Image (cartoon, rainbow, N blue to C red; front, side):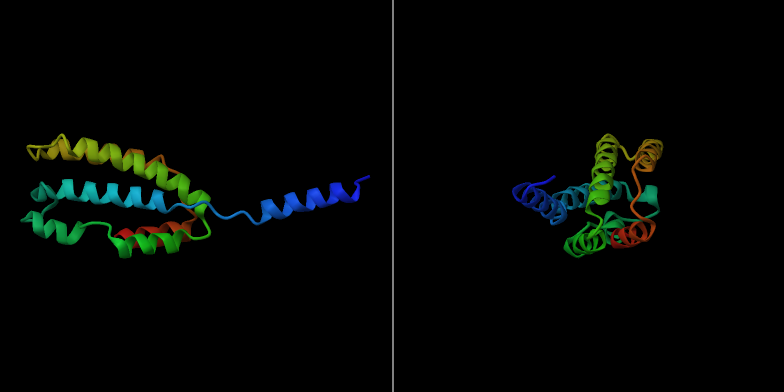
Length: 143
């Protein structure tokens, strides 16, 4: 039988666990956004591969993941922080690999770009997905 002090301890532990704050994923969002922006910038160094005439034209379409997009991502992921962290860590690693690969394409060779893109797609495909409605809303933030 639980004594009064044991019950108080158990209720305290249950309350503590039940009131835990969701993890802070703002750093994960920033890392992801920075890497996507870096990848977009590197891709736009070779605009003709994507069918653009100029770097500026490519940047206008792909651009950076700015404050508005980061706020959108944060809003969409609210309430899904644990799944979001798993996704963002994986996606950031995939984008880091993509950036590293794109940095080797100094001569804007289409075959190098295609190889980088294929490796990136494979890496992203290995990432856990967010809940379906959250995934589509997340993608809308950065598209």
